[in-house]
Image (cartoon, rainbow, N blue to C red):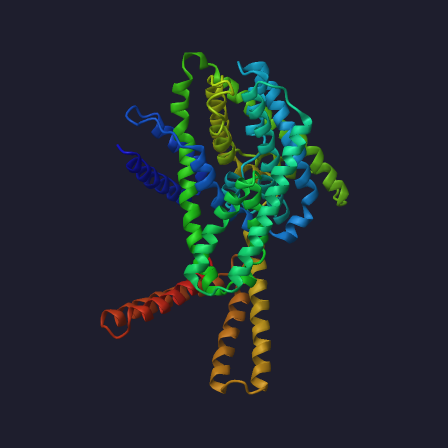
Length: 520
């Protein structure tokens, strides 16, 4: 089996598993990891190794960029204090605790134990975003979890690079060196990301071609990452900053058709990359264990101890922080619900694995770097453990906490927004009609359409208030039946050569957009 064949099979298997996960409402990352471990245990499957350069350069930039684009500046400003505490303080505390436990319970030396702690110190934005999409968390909590996972990488990567450099050189850790590297990596990456975002914004304002817009959107994260790494800054930070800056300007940079196309293309790319990368995490674990040899029989207990340390430190850090926030905002009795969700959402994923794979093979003197295989095994095992355990149980924890938004609340908010938009359009239409800016037949047609939207929004609000009321459901069902009939008629006209393929596609796209707009 060639490498290309193996990659294609992996893509097919990962896509099928991820599709099944969506159908069964199971967290896709968790199921993909289990599937990868299962495939990796088969005796005829070759040992799978993925270069860290492939993960760092090909996989991570678009996944990080897609997660960063979902960050709202307004929401981020509301939570920047706790996010800063978690992104810096919790990362340092986690790295120190894991390093101490690993040095005490494993054969790892002090420097290699610190390398392991730095690798596992930060939560993973790709895993957190993939798991969080399924949960109706309140906006503030969702933003805290997602922003923390994006911004804590600079801290952990600085620790990792310093620790690896110390392990390779065989020297002692220097606090001054660590501080200098942090400023160079994090600050430099932020500057590069902001510069790339500014340049891309200027280009996109002058571009109206959907193909070019899609290419620019796909190239942007890679440009930010490569440029930052070339100047010895943090590529991860550059991608995150570029994504956050450009994500808040999307409405001003492009029109509706381009946004729809870019969103569809990016959704496909992210789906494929997420599916493959989480399957790879599970696939690599069996081969790494085989490489560990007979001396690594105790690695499962060691991995459990490390994972337990990470979870314990996170709980001890998040609980007082949450209590302080609740007191600051004048909330009544201190609640356990928010810290439990924040603590349990700290999964590890792609970034720790990529960092561990990038550990050098040899020291400065040319000898093999000792205990590298054990760091890889423990890292991968902890990633698999957190993705499976926390991934499968995060939704029940959120439900038990009672902080998830009710579907009726979300539906009511969306219906209110649709009603307000339709009324604003109707008001503008009446003003244009008074100016006689359009024929009366056109105004009347638009008025009927807007009034239909208002009536539809009202029925959705009524159904949200009283789920027993099936008016909105009946409307959606009947409208979809009509759309299906219109689609069949459109296909008949095309089959009879009465319309061109271009006309058929344009009209079908409009029908599809209306169908999606009807909601569930």
